[in-house]
Length: 200
Image (cartoon, rainbow, N blue to C red; front, side, top):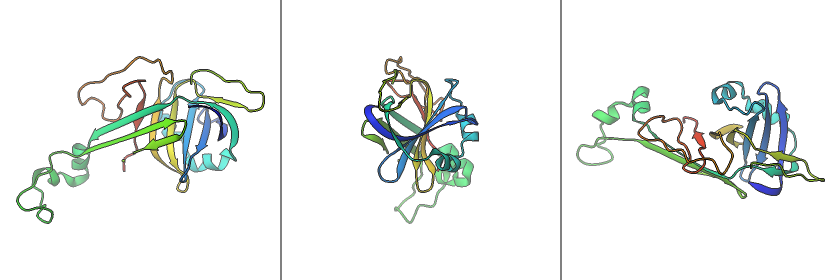
């Protein structure tokens, strides 16, 4: 997203060793961006150290800044049969009693979850920048290296959608994956981005 000016709250977090920005959106949501100074995003390490309540308290009021942030569309899909079986719902796939919803015997063969998120100049829409712009009057926030993001519910300070953009360069090579492979991440078909969603 390259807009002339956007309001955002910004800080440097010593524990995360990262620049942290919060972009306010409509309907009580915000986009949290964590850009490690190392240029490497370790989602497990960020997750272990990320305290959203503390960040909200320290971020302060939004300031208008020049912003360079890549536009992206991310998609995630997962087969939930194994997860549901491990949670004790295996009977649903073998011998369920679904007589109250249909006549005859029914069997659930698959449960699929799909979600997507698109970020552009209008904000983020979720379903289920490579250079610096200088401005004399406004500071600049340029996301030009790998970053972690979370679409946040401001009221509960809970992440609704999490992800990592490993290469914010729009000219990044296409990355394809095959088979069922890694169900935690699916690359975007155009820019090699990956997305993770919190379990419900």
